[in-house]
Image 1 (tube, rainbow, N blue to C red):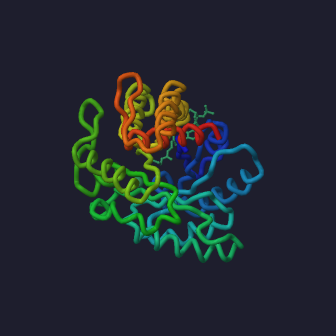
Image 2 (cartoon, rainbow, N blue to C red):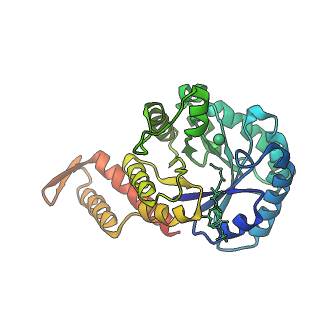
Length: 292
Ligand code: COA
Ligand code: MG
């Protein structure tokens, strides 16, 4: 999946609009975009939306961002939404694989009550929102059965670090957040799941957003979070492999298939070895997924 669009759970209008946004997945938010007084109403609205959407096909995957395990709100969030069977829960402020196992145990109880098999509802953790989380970003492999991928966040982390900004004047992330981004990439690769790049809040800046999508693709992310429908087509375009890229990947795969014992092949005067083959196969898999 390439594009994940955040939608505040208390906005019927945005939920409706999001369904036809073209996003591969929607993230119905019960956390930061909902004030404390509004949590109960938002939970009911999220559950009703999930039930309505269940009958619609084709439709985006639907995730629900619950409140963090530290808040005391997560159990009531799960009680409300798990019976409505979201594809996944987004877990904010996740501190390593232990947090996923903890949230997974909570889900397992609700899955049993709703007649769902174990590990049916996946988890997409936001893996870098606290200082502690940075030090355990490499521990997600043990929780792999629940993982939909790994994503990262800079807003809560900058608040915790006491920073005044997380981007420079040109809109590029500053060092602590570049580290968090890299730890998300490495943590996802170590757990053999997809890495999804974080939000770009300046939603009128199309050029800056496109640049950040291209940098994310270049570095190994397979998709990006969106906060506004206008960001969705840009994500889908950038993260869908071009016909040229697919043809090049196919040529690499074919060259190795013709030379099964070879560690290295040459195509049009360029050397390709085993890591190139792995990359080509991954690109072709992403191309197939983008079409489905
Ligand atoms: N999902 C679905 N629809 C959305 C949307 C979203 N995330 N963001 C905006 N829209 C809709 C608006 O309702 C509006 O609909 P309309 O044309 O029928 O009136 C249209 O898209 C254009 O919106 P626009 O006027 O450009 O923006 P806005 O001022 O209404 O909204 C935000 C700006 C930031 C409040 C809004 O984009 C938003 O709520 N984003 C998600 C916030 C969130 O979930 N944050 C938590 C994760 S960080
Ligand atoms: Mg947050």
